[in-house]
Image (cartoon, rainbow over all chains, first blue to last red; front, side):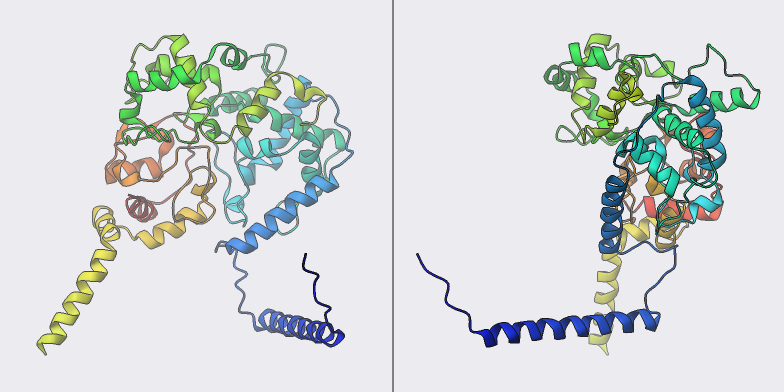
Length: 315
Length: 122
């Protein structure tokens, strides 16, 4: 075994001195750069990759740390979700947009871009969403609503953010019309009891069979499917599990994937996707394979929301 | 004199080869691909679509747009031609009512530039 040689004191001193000198030069350089005005603060130019990474990573850690210990109330309350929808349209939609609704000009000019919450809210727990809504985010355009909206109203927005992930553009329009007219009673699905096909996918979907079926039915001639094919006729299905919409019309959940594959013309009369008489059980297998493509996080969160875990557990 | 002419020709040939896809795309659309790329960034198309070469464009709401020049259909029902693409970009809700792709108020001029960039994606 080789023992490390004793380092003379002088070398340590010298090293420290060099380090201090480097830091001083860097600091001065940084100050000079700041004072020079060379840094482009314009919001219509994207961040440098490194700056963006630092901002995002720091933001994520801060939100995780600061939102600890927030107690989540029952969010499966139809009147709470309805109120959240009304508040969302007024306070969030101008910058974030909504299913089938563009953000307004003001939201478009913000850097970083306010993300579509149909997907972005899947990245956060209930308490984190509540914290972000309450406090806002520095170095982004996100304002804190803590001083304008009551605690109940801010939880209402969180409750709606758990609902928006399962809304199609048509659903959102229906909700908008209903609240404009003051409807929204018992038979309106502010809280959904649908299963969206998750249980059946888990119980019966076979991804190996599904992959073979995608070959047999020739799906791969029109679609690029990750490792299988490179078709250009339809959209690529790589990362399918992460995709929010099917054909721009249906929310991407197992039941809709099966419904679309078995009869696409039912949803879009002029679609180029033919009806291939795929049986529902076969479509379920195809779905099982397609959901192996891309990160499973979106689907996992949706499954938990559908399973009703959103009432108390804070995923 | 002759060697200078050859030099100019070689440089012109090389630079045109580098930008061939861009030139083709611009000829087909009458737009400017570089302007289009910036418009795609500022309209926030990347919030919903993954678009190669555009900063922060990693969205998963809509389909990825890589290889767009070779895509046969737009929105699953329109043939992928420049005219159809202009129409889809400027008035998606007119093409597919209730589509998740919203009307963003893109002008005809801007749609040409955006289309020019999309057709450079091979």
